[in-house]
Length: 158
Image 1 (tube, helix red, strand yellow):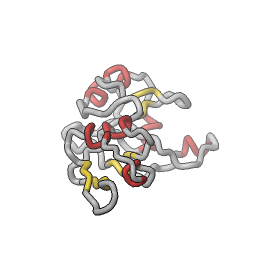
Image 2 (cartoon, rainbow, N blue to C red):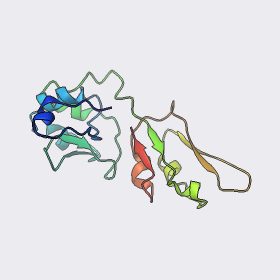
Image 3 (cartoon, helix red, strand yellow):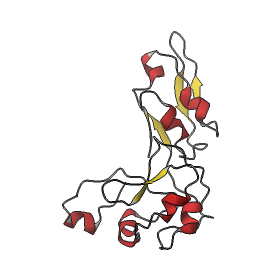
Image 4 (cartoon, helix red, strand yellow):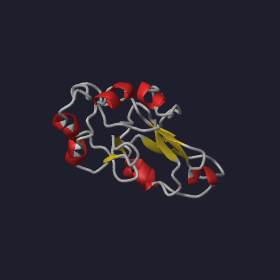
C-alpha cells in the first residue's frame, strides 16, 4: 500500500500510486522527498528494469521491460539516502495471477512457469480441465520475470 505524500497532495495527485520503486527503497513519501532524480540508479541497472518515469522522472520498476536480478547496483550508486542496506530483504512483493490467465480460460499456456527461475509458479492438474496456476509465495521473490512473458498480462507484482 502506497503512502500519500504531502508533495502529491499539494499537486492535486491524491490517488494512491501503483508505482513500484527499486528494491531496498525506503517508504514512498520519503523516497520522493529525498530522491534528486539524478538517474544514477537507472544507469546502473543491469537489466534495464529500472526506468525514469515519464511523469515526474523518479526511478521506478517496469516489469514489461525486464526482470529484477536484485544485483543491488541501484542502491550502491545512489548518492541520496533513499535505499535501505542491501543485506536486508529487498522487498516483500510477490506475484499474483489474475483470473484472466489463459489456463483459467481453458487455453494451455505455461509461459510464466518457464520464466520463473525459483520455481514459484506450478500448474496443478485438474480433472476435465486445463491445469491451474498455483503460486508458492514462499519461493516467489517478486522479480517480475513472469510478467513480461504473460501474453494476456494476467500477472502483477504487489
